[in-house]
Length: 88
Image (cartoon, rainbow, N blue to C red):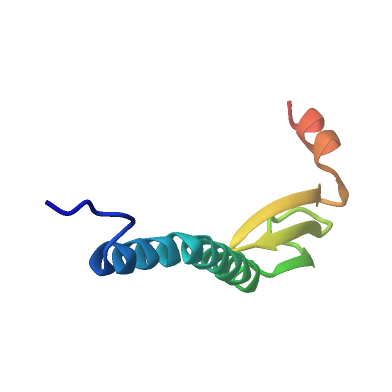
């Protein structure tokens, strides 16, 4: 019986294929992460500071409109905290 030394052709090819696959996986993962981050940045909703009389008082409201939702800074010309305290 002959004694085998080292890897045969098939084992060598398999080892090279597996090694190359493992070596390239991080590149694909990194590329996917970069593409996801770019997509997130491009899809960031527009933020717009608006001044309108939308509640119905005498003075206009100042608010940010973000993706269709409003974040009020002033209501009826006064800071939100003052407006809420006066309503209580």
